[in-house]
Length: 231
Image (tube, rainbow, N blue to C red; front, side, top):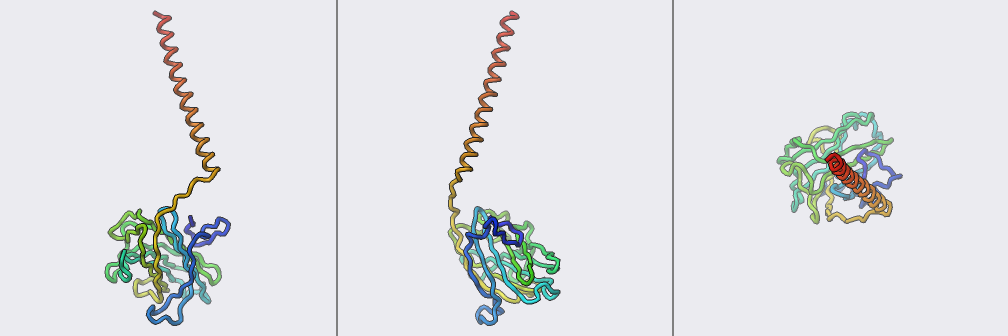
């Protein structure tokens, strides 16, 4: 599974299995003009959904983008417009890579901070290219009242939003919507090394248990023998 640190680790292949697409974020989705091109990667693994957003901007490390953010807004099941959950990575100083992960419940147009924060998010800027990474639980959220409950075999709309002011929703400048279908987890059989390790562990602990039982048996027999001799 990807490590949420804003860095794509090619040595581990953490994002190799992701579905990858290029989309544009627009000022007005209905009038798609002068969009910001982004890489959007999605991978579902275990009980988590992972989303990566990557793009370039000129002079990206300047103070103009100090309060930049990317947010993932999630619509309720069966709705393509009722976005009630927001996962945001918000910068406070982009040149020093200082940011925080925020989890909000959207009540009408009000962004209310969740009592229990679910998921994780991180970002990293290298020259003019920035990478945002998110993870969010699937069928395992701790707060179904404030988070959209992501379930298997369902389609959900995710709204990718970008802004450079720490205000929601007023700070949102451009956005676009991507639909993601969540799949049931695929069972992956253990590797040969894992099987060998598992069998070895079982054999070792079984042997230790048998020796311990034999030890208790011998102690019991010895005590009986001592009592017989004394009598």
